[in-house]
Image 1 (cartoon, rainbow, N blue to C red):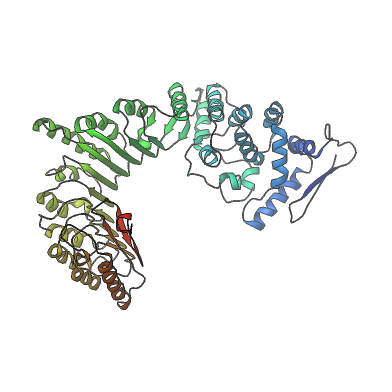
Image 2 (image 1 turned 90 degrees about the horizontal axis):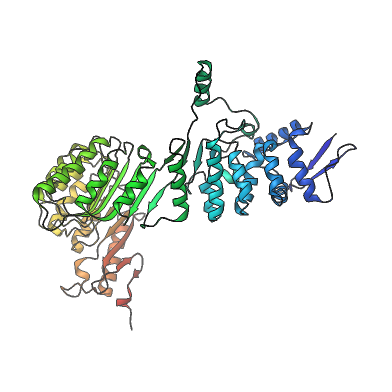
Length: 551
């Protein structure tokens, strides 16, 4: 039997057969496509086809298969799911991704289940596929059922390589486009993979007469818990994780928690490999005692890089001893987080006078520290300026922290200490007045890496804004400054903005920016409308809220 393939630059393909090589029931082009897939492994000239794929790979830099032919073949094959399932044992690995895509998009549940069990790659990036094709519950369940059947087998299939089921929607974005997950030669698909460490371990166990342990499959997922009742896809995933706990490891890199009862959270976290969590946000209106029930789980997240705690409050009549115990319980968990780099504390009611308890337990220097909408004392600010864990900060945020009545000398010291690394400084809504801000300017002028500076919502005059411009002329990396509307642009003490005055002052400041040689620096002005609370932004032209629009 001989098979001759002709291809041109328009990617049109035809197949002709000599005597003795007739595809079964070759009544249509679609049946020919099916026959090509089924007979591919048995064609004597398959080596020629592999060489053809390789030549295209080296010529184009990526693998570019005959897409139209494979699409037609896949659609035809999936019209008979039983035939598709039977073909999987002999299906070339390079045809699995397009066929799986068609099966998943077309909700062919039997084919999806079978293809998961026969998947020939180490990773199945299902999440990226779900991003493009909104998942049908039954199709998603079929994929997990296929994995479940695979894990239940004592003797795993000869072809099985699946080690990771990736449900993250922003991972492996180009896998389904390139069909192999990496921008590399198609040789990596057609040739055997080198032995993995796990496979070597199994051979050692076999030689020692031991029964090899079945390696678990990892499921990668980013979790966002918003309601007490979970959506059906997550519920089904957690059900499978609970049933196959020793063989199905749920790994979560990003975890977001919003308004979920703590008892529900604890049940879910028992199924998650806590050392896999690197990014955690807790946005719950919790009492400090409620946070205490969550803390043992936090202490087991040993690879955590980023932590945001928001809206933790004290009850009005909490006993001081109880309050102190809960705070110690929280700060002690930081000793178990050796990789923490970013810490954000928002609306934490117990922080005043206790910032030293939080920061002294950090084991490594932070890159980001954001304290927002909290009360802090002058002693807190003093400790912050001396704390070893903040000497290498790249991002410092104190938005919504009232500094009006405090001496800003410690903040000046802190900015000076971090001047070689600080890139982003946020002092929005801090109540900083002219005299305080002027004292910060010499330190700001030394921040050689600063790219963004925000200080909206502070009562600053035009003269101080001009002084800021003079002090920051030498900061070559500064590209964005968000500043408040100057005091001179208000009509009265109640904060009524005069658009005409603001336009004049804004134009004057923009002219100073241009003449300073820093025209590339983008300056915006933002302020809060006293009537509706909306933000008002000013670029080249002011963007006003409806309160300032003529009726």
